[in-house]
Amino acid sequence: MINIGNNREETASVTVENKETRQQERRLVEASQNGDKKAFGLLIRMHQKRLFRFIYGLLGSFDMTEDVVQDAFVRAYKAIDRVNPEYAFYPWLSTIARNLAYNQIRKEEKKDSLDGMQETGFDPRSTELGPLESLLNDESKKRFYEAVQSMPVKYRTVFALRHFEDMDYAAIGSYLKIPPGTVDSRLYRARKFLLEQLKDLL
Amino acid sequence: MDHSYFIDRLSAYHDRDLPPYELEVVREHLESCEECRKQLEKYQQLDEMIEKKSRLDESDYWEKSASKIEQALGSTATEVVDIKPTKSFGMVWKLAAVAASIAALTFISLHRSDIEEPVLEHMSPAMVAPVPVDEITGRTDDTLNQLFDEFDTKKEASKELRDDSNLKDAFGEDEDAEKRSLAEAELEFFEVIAPKKIVSEKSHRAQAPSFAAPEPTDTKPAEPQVKLEGIAVDGDAVRYLKEEKAKSAGLGEVSSEQFSLSAPQKVAPPPKAAQSLKVTAQKDFVKLAPAIADSLFLDESFLKLRLLRDQRDSLRSAIADYGTRRYREGVVPDSVEVLKPLADSSYNVMLDSMISTVYQIGLLSNDTLEINRSIKFLRNFPWNTTGEQRDRINDHLEKLRLKLD
Image 1 (cartoon, one colour):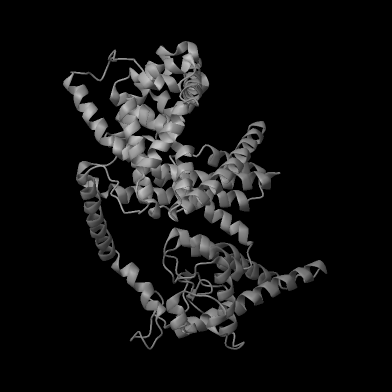
Image 2: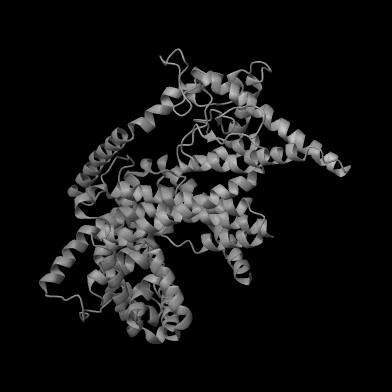
């Protein structure tokens, strides 16, 4: 019973918060549809951090991420008339960005397989964060991103889709064109790796 | 199953992304295994850590980036852009659309008789050449209608008779003992056996066992045969039923415009001769429940709850079955890859009705335990849900908890 009570409070607060941001977002989307660039600018500021984190998780490169995020917003603005303001804006935006990132991932995967990467074992890749470091004020955050960075792309993509976008195995599988069982095993390895690397941060 | 099997499954268990039967097996194992519990806890900690450590900090970079994007927006003219990643992806959807229409056509041809039959019954006798004849009794609808009236009268009569006998009983008179037991047997049929028959029999012209009543009749229709096809709302169904009853009792004509019915019925209101109760699909049971209950003076919510529970159980096995196959075979076999969107959408429909079924059980039930169970089930909904479904679940949970208070 105690459990139920706690959950109720949680749900209630989340719903209230969601409702407010949803309403705000809806007004912004409607204004953008009427050609208000400033409103769209606010939408950019609302969502760019989350989108950047996700795309960076997929691509692992600052420059590529920057390009994809920018391209995604531009495309979203051009197609804003197709959005139903009743629905949340972010899922639509992230789908555009994800699809833009898709070709990059394919390229990366090919490169990886040419390097003779095996399913097991992790490639000690470059862990330099570059410009991303300026967005991480905390040493532990840098370590986290270094660890994510050092994962091979096939594990990192599954990890990012699951943890940053909350997609289920079937959805991840159909996006990456791999069976859900493979999603499962890749995610298992990615988590195992992170747990080993970041044991002290838990 | 050995321990390493469970260690491998814990990551997926943590995401609740296992087929239901495996979820159950892992859950049982967790109760007895300390090591697995610790591992699961680690995954939870990892989740929290990822959420905290992945947040990007404030920096002037964001403002610069936003203005850069704003500049790139260029002309204010909006246009339709293709956001699909590759061209071949579009092809898959086209193929899927073709496959879906083929599947639909096949379905229609296979179930032609099922689909066409109700359409015929919507039409007035003038539109259907032969007078409809019951397959079982061989009677026309007119004779059925008479029996329907008889049924009502008989039911009332047996009720009165029982009450009467009870009264006599109270005064120590027991001369009608035989009559009374017959009346009680009849009532039991009307109130207990008949409704069960309506639900369980697909045949819309159910036959009743012969009555031990004075009339030497052999077969009779089991219960009021009332046309309910195409009525979407419970309230409408009940009202419609009542008005049909009034009509057949000769209490005057009721205009069909007074209550909303589906389009074909508005154009040609069904003649009272065409009264038949048709149970085509399981979901219709729930719609029909109030009408059946009303006609038999049963507790509406009792019957509805029972139907909902049945629906929940069969949905549960259907979803589990689908999930297991999907998981085992890696989404779907290659040969039917194009049908995947179709399969996915039907899976979602099953989940949708599961959510609303469990919610309605919680709403209708007066049993705290059952409400709690509904809450628990919705909270730990054992299948993947879309964001929309999640929202609905949260909404339902809130309402159920309010009811519990």
